[in-house]
Length: 164
Length: 415
Image (tube, rainbow over all chains, first blue to last red; front, side, top):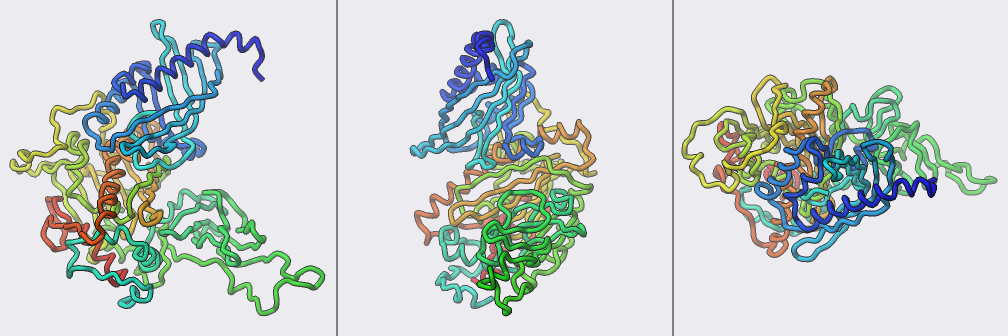
């Protein structure tokens, strides 16, 4: 049970993390993907895992980035190498919960959904699930040290190329 | 088999004598789809069900599919593996509805009929009725109402299933050369690292063809070409089973030395394109050779994959005429250390629904499906490598294996 005192203590950090997540999803939804690696620390990690694998304790991720280079490679591949029908995401994020803000690494979780719109206008709820974040402060700015995206569905429709 | 198509009432006739032109109708027709379920998936073919290490203990089960048919694979008290159609013999309700688990017996939730782990009917609720009224009569024989059993074979840990008693033993089905490649890749006990599922907006056969199409690999997938997993200039080849139903396409880290190939203008060849972090492309030569890429198909829908150190089985499940689902079982070896685990996680960025060299396979079939729906009387053409269905040593610029698939399809379908 969250008490009033807890809320007071968390309020400032909650607002800052909420702003970080807002900046993050707008960056993706507005196709400013070259800025995406900047949201992570240089040694940041990013996994997109299905809930099936997560619950089974199996490590395989759909996307696994470990360190800035791999984040950059995801974007350069998307821009220059991979072939796919153009599409856009609209992220919705809700229920931000501060799990632990007692140390320099703040642990949070939140729910998200992504609506995908195709060039002809076809829309679907493409992804939804939970994100477990570890956030740290680097030179006065908050960054993700880790984002673990857990997808509720075990299935991906067609392909996954734009990060979540 | 010759009259099978007439029994099912399709008027479809193959429009040519060979398999170098494929009518679009085979990707769009419900009657053909229904026939495929009966004559291919429930016909004389071997289908991947699961891996034995996924059900290590007595009572462990896993749900899977052969075509549309729901199958459950279970390990019994004796340690033997059994596969049954996941359908109660009474009203046909699915017995297992959680993807995996551990059970003592099968227990139908609808009317509480029970079966042992070999599929034998062991109990019928209220079989004596209530106060002498209702219940079973003497003519009901428990032995006649067991679960429909699937014939299985354990092939190096891969549990294969077939509905038909006419299917030859697996090793004979794919032949020695292709068995040798399974032994080349899967050299040690396996462990499952996870699963992916990818839903394609296309008929199942378009994805099967894509796997057999060694011609596209270095053209569609920029990554292959750029990072030297598969370049047209690399040595490799296509092996085909004697039946031509199954194939292996492989690439080896050796150059052919044909200058003409380097001069080809290919979209996927972007020499200036590079990676910031190349750890993803690290290849630990764990199999004792320099083969970088080996894609092996087992007719109709199984793929055994080795791409660098990314090992997987892909199982394709038709989901109606215009949709199919690919289930990837991502593998490592049981004795992998932490460093090898990490390497496999990184290299697995290459494959799966978000894979650098596989994601295109998710959309290209949809591009064909859309066009096919618009003109079912038109046809594709498969001219690369001539009209023959022959193995190819050195070059993978051939559609032989695709034609081999259609040979198998026509033989099963009697079309």
